[in-house]
Every structure is written in C-alpha cells, then in structure tokens.
Length: 181
Image: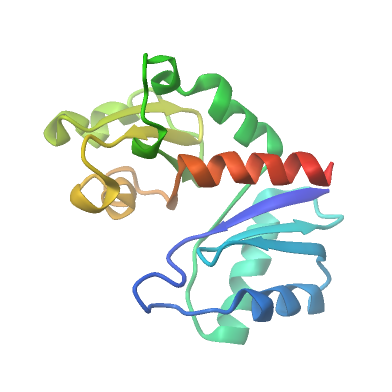
C-alpha cells in the first residue's frame, strides 16, 4: 500500500535539516519500499504492507528522531485525500482564481464542523478558510508569509498536528500518486 507522508517543519529557514537522499536511505533501511521524495520540504511516498496511516507516521517519526535527532511531526494521507482536495476546494470554483494564493492544511485528525468557530478565521480577514474533514482549504489574500493564520496558529487553536502545502505542491503530489498506482 502506498502512503504519502507529509513531514512538518523540515528544511525550513535552516531548521531541522535533512537531506532527502539520506531520508530515503533511512526509510528503506527500516523496511519501506519504493521510497520517493518530492522537493526538500518533506513530501515522501512509501510503500508498505502496513495499512494504518497513523502507524506508518509513527514509525517514520521515530526513525527520523533516531537517525537525525529531529522531532518531526508526520501527517500521512492517501490518494483519496488528495483527490478530495480538487473535488471539495470551494475556492477553485471562484472565477479567475489565482491558485498561487491557495493552500491546504493537512490535519492529523478529522475536524468537527464546529472547528471553524474555534479557528476564529474572521480575525484574519481578508484571508479565508474552509474545513473539509481532515484538511483546511486556505485562500491567503496577500501570501502565506504575511499572515498569522499559519500552521502554528491552527495547531494551537485546534490541538492537532497540521502541515500546510501550497496548491502547486498538492497538484504535483496527486500526479505523482497517480503515476505510482
């Protein structure tokens, strides 16, 4: 079974540096097959007999700490999660949408419909967000680097693990998933 593992906070601003080739070798050494990485920000496909995404994420998190000494949260998703991004993203329906402003926060657990209230997104206007299961679709008005509505804020307000990917990365990851199947 193929899993996409989204590592949070590696190779960002010189923190938690991990070379993708070293990560690939490390994951292969603990039994993962067909390990494939995409860009330096921690997008890793692995094949394994293990079907439970949480178990895969836990094993990878443990091994990264053991091999590299970094505490790295891991969110594991399947191809259906990526497909849902395209099917359910309300911002894609807007006329002349600039996809450079679109992001997806992948969450470690399914969110409740009341989670939107907990986020208090109205404080971050004109940024917008929409919850869909274990993901939050985000449309930044100016850009991801110029908002306080980020992964740390989401994690603090909802008490979850979150990792955010831009729309271009989400698109590439789905293509890569489809090529693997």
